[in-house]
Figure 1: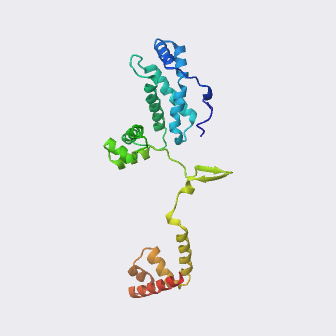
Figure 2 (figure 1 turned 180 degrees about the horizontal axis):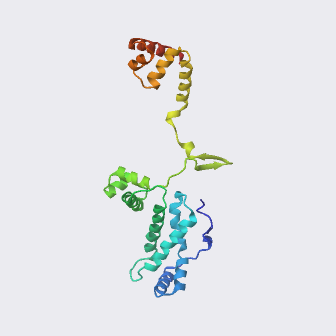
Figure 3 (figure 1 turned 60 degrees about the vertical axis):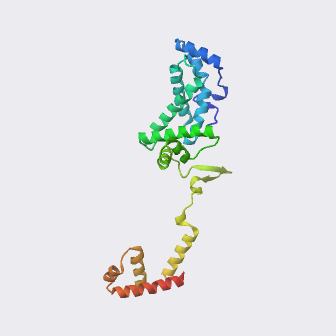
Length: 257
């Protein structure tokens, strides 16, 4: 996904016009009086605003053309519903309208379905986080956000994670001369470290030093989850004999490893 590409939906974004506050006021008045040309000029003159807003959603790997079109729908709604009698800047009114339209699109097209209550909590958390970032001058933790919202921090964290776009373990995060590093390469697996791998090899080699009956007892006891009584009944010896054979097998395994 290239969010810095010049042409989006057939529009050359490098040549988008800008409108002054006075021009916007005049065009809004004319558009609300039924002037379609003024309405089109007003929409076209605010496409830069749409472009800047969809950059916020760059991490979701959505098609930039789709997001731009959805953002334009929000812009059109803002143009048609803005009250020129109020002492409010048009951009102040348009920004939440555009963001709301994009978020609605992302919510409805998310591959993972999240309940409405969880989504609402997550969106409130993101709004509070943005507000605190402006006040504090740095990005607050989710615990701080939850405290401001008077909500449980774990519930807020789970809600924000729930609306996050899933990523593939094979998504590249860095590429140099054709060699890529993927998300998978950055995840550690404590269950398959070199030490455990070597221990597994050593155990297999040590098991070869046991006789057939000892190997059977160790396999049934520790891989099959059976008790000494169950093993004794299965192979036709006493539980005391199983215990003795097990201890002897362990002794040889320790020496072998």
